[in-house]
Image (cartoon, rainbow, N blue to C red; front, top):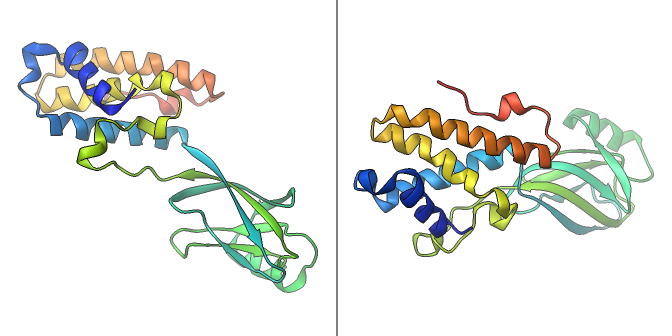
Length: 205
């Protein structure tokens, strides 16, 4: 579903005509965007694979653009383990052979530190991407989560319903949509083999 279709869903099936005047299009867009990023953050997606070439002697490589988290790094199919920066430096100074360790901290730099120094080869990085909000003109045609997991896009509308009703001080409607959201969330969590349902669900504040 596009965000435009979700706006229609919110207006026609969630807030309905009786209350639609309480919300501007901007209010609904903002609520949908926040909801989409909150769900993506809970499930740690969308994920992507980036491949880059290392030269012999390299001790770092650039993290993929818009990278939020690195899940795995391998070089020529040899898997590297996530280690602390100090441990990577230690292995860099004393180790040799294929890359075995890596460290990346976006608070420090945009580079992934590796050890031992590279022998060359192709590095494969699995990572979570940072979602970028579309411009106002493109928003309605864009899809949540870059189009990923389309069958669960209605989750975004259900989650957005909660702050929208809170904005209009209609607390009596909040619990219904929280239940709808949690029910659909459980379906998505099961499909993605997530077992921490309790942490993912929305609870009464």
